[in-house]
Image (cartoon, rainbow, N blue to C red):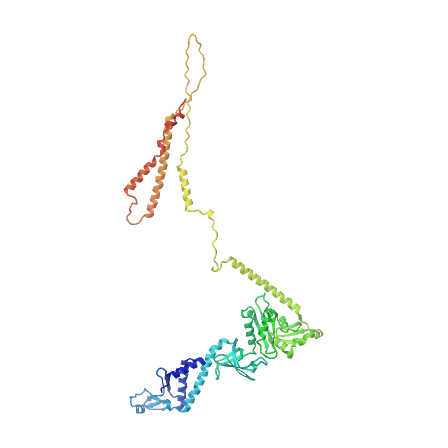
Length: 558
């Protein structure tokens, strides 16, 4: 059977846009529906039927398959060799071959067409359900926005995009009403994965989750996790109680939710229905102490004291005589919400009856003092943890592995380097070769004094006083020669030290530059001769040319 390919492709594209079902999924559903309808028309669900749809060539084939056998036992599934060759004379058949009986689609009965149509609707519903389930399964317990398409006293049909959801009257907020075209918010309670009417997306506006999700959306402190909603109790359209808590001791959770002059909570209340009366919301500060928590839950009633039975999850609450009606609330709504919020069964008595019956209970002041002590301990513990953390961050550098020890300060005074050691060695060498001063002491000799006496007749001999003459054994020439020799010796020693030092440096350079290959001198023969002449010239200094004769006048005797 030939088909119009362009029309089929246009229809598949439209289905994919409207229902979100892929074209391959639609083709598979069509094949399965046609095979099932044809199999039913043959009179047996176990008949072998195949359907081929080729969109490229625009051809649809549907045929029954029978196995070729020698002896037929089931004519719905088998055919003999003779019968197969009798119906198809263009081919020789053997046992084990398959014989195909093609159906003329133009001659199909109307019943088969209707069956294919119904089966396709069912397949489309199942495919749509799976698509919507995948799309909305991540939106459970969140808010979605839809537009009202139909509304009556029983409920409203709301379009949320690719499909419609039904909002029954019991899931609405008391007496609220809608007009066609209104945009409303819905809370997704669940998404059913089964059902014959497509995807089952359950929505609500009276659920506690609707109020919780609305507060999370409107109050930033709840959205960012600074404030946590511990519990919600609600009677839609009448009253709700919400207990809130914060891990930050500096944050007042109830005050933050209410906002300045009630601005924050009023944004939430304005979206809770459009009926004649607005729903009231009580924000309760969650307490770890059960007694205080129950007292908070019964507000606006003034609670005097409480007796809590933790084992049986019950509590006896004593209120002021004029607060009984407030504790119970209109039609008992306040007491019911307190029970739902705390999870405790609550009995309420007035103060005068409790005194007559002699009931013992803990007062609000007693419980509050215990709560303040616990809070003070919590603050002290938080401060200690902050101090420890601060000390840890001050001693440890960020980004370094645990156990890392920072390098300690170095004491450079105790350390020496090669340069300092070299200076010390040079100083020691200079001290070793420095000449010692030679003292030249004059030699004092006593020479005998010659006594000359001349005796004459006219002159009497006179005795003269003895005189002593001091002479040095070292003459001026000897002294000058000694000084010259000493100067030459000093020059030779200095020159020898310089040659020794230079030789050592050349040895070091030679040892550093030594290689395993042949060695080559770094100086030519002419350069070596020049160096040798320079060394010989250094032996003699300008002091050799000094003329000491000009100093003789200082040594001449008068």
